[in-house]
Image (cartoon, rainbow, N blue to C red; front, side, top):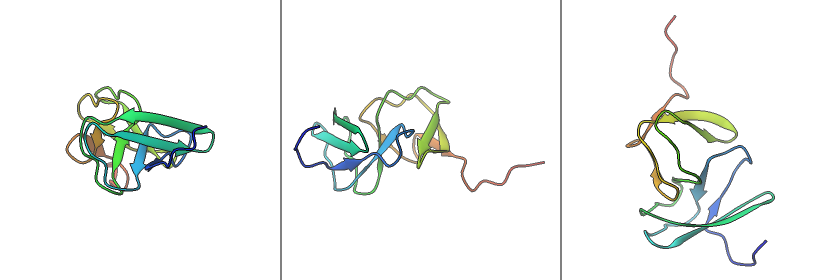
Length: 99
């Protein structure tokens, strides 16, 4: 594992997104750290503090996993290092299911 200071965290090993722990800029590298995980990911968009970035390519309709749980699905293809938010995912957590 690298000694570089990380600027994003992987909360659960099952997650396919990480969370920025500072404001990150396009073309900078997100240095993502988790338990037994480390990766440097070039960013394709700015990622605000506390917001999500894709750890892998997320195809349209792919489940978005945070905290080890599905929190939504991709509404379009999302590139690795792209900002993951309301504009490109449909949240499913907290939505009441119709019977």
